[in-house]
Image (tube, rainbow, N blue to C red; front, side, top):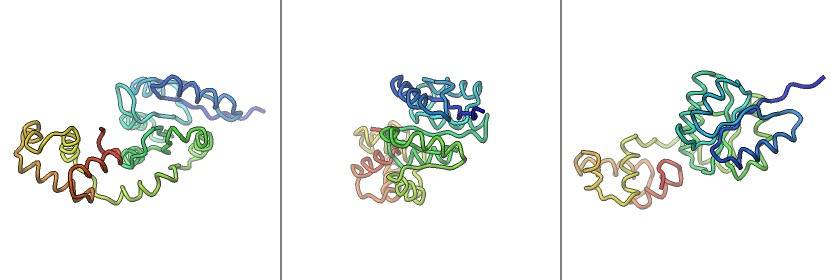
Length: 208
């Protein structure tokens, strides 16, 4: 009697990564890739059509970001099991994905070592987070999150804009921007904007 295989959907905009996953999974007796998607929109449509047991989802996808795709998938299928794939170890992005319902978070450079084990664990109802990220995520979850406007201010600062220029771009006073920067420093536990930008980029709060 043939056992039922774990049905997998792989959503990533890099063909070589998809091909690599298909090749590795194809060698396993207990799993199979039933679909592929190259964009966020395709991922949502494929999940709706195929109802896979486990979805491998790139955090950064064309058309729709990975977290948006995850939210859409879980809106259709509340118990969907999704493993987020990323090249970036920022705790802010991991926390966002986990809060949105991801079952696991995998760094792409660890796929060779951890992919198959993680798929089986998630299919069995367990969660997975890389050891190198666990402590950062735990600490990040404790810290007070930056507001949407504070992230916006910091993103402009990262592009080299002065407080005055940021104020002009956002249509607020320079004093308001200074207030936002003060809050940012407190929340990130830094003393200057360069350090704030560095910490925020490392944690995945902003993009450089």
